[in-house]
Length: 259
Image 1 (cartoon, rainbow, N blue to C red):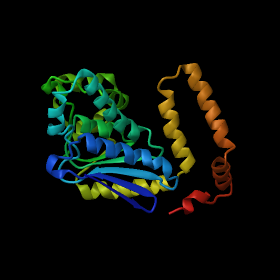
Image 2 (cartoon, rainbow, N blue to C red; image 1 turned 120 degrees about the vertical axis):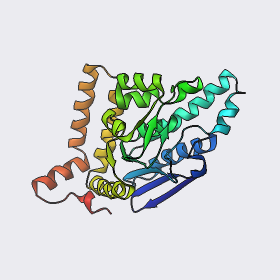
Image 3 (cartoon, one colour; image 1 turned 90 degrees about the vertical axis):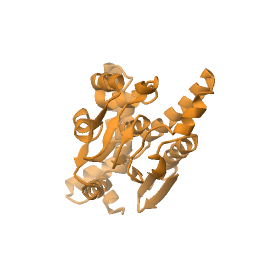
């Protein structure tokens, strides 16, 4: 139900339950979480692509999984929800850039996966929605990830209405970053993005992700201290020195020779 492949220094992770619209259950949740946590063990990996087979990106929760929830106690449900949160967090905290390739519907938790990605590229026919209220539930676990991406105003509207919206609206909200007429155009753009990322300092990319996550809960004074400390450390680091020297010498930095 999850296919993993590494090509050169890109890790491709693909959900493979097309007959169930790539809805996730306990097993898929665990596999996705483990696959993203595993990236920490491979410093040569420069980016991750999260995609899905079939017509849908992800319809959210698997119906059979939801049936089990009916018989869970509140404590069991919270434990289950924590595992789901771990999955989204493993994507957000992945040390390298994560590109979401969205070729179809992304609903509920599926839209949460999109929100957790650093880059979200979608075809124009993709559609999105936070439909939990129609089931007497709310998009609680994904809320921190979605609000972080689209803001409280848009989240309020779509969390309350449960309505679906198209790719152009998702683009306007900032849930996705680019929209394409067909999958071929999306993949062409994704290949270009991967090439662009390969030109950037691996250390700098990891530092950007770490910095942005840490800044969420800091005061202005703490942000000032954290960011000045970070840039000072990077300026004297091996890659920082190499990048500055290469720029002054008008040559490519050493990491660009890595395929």
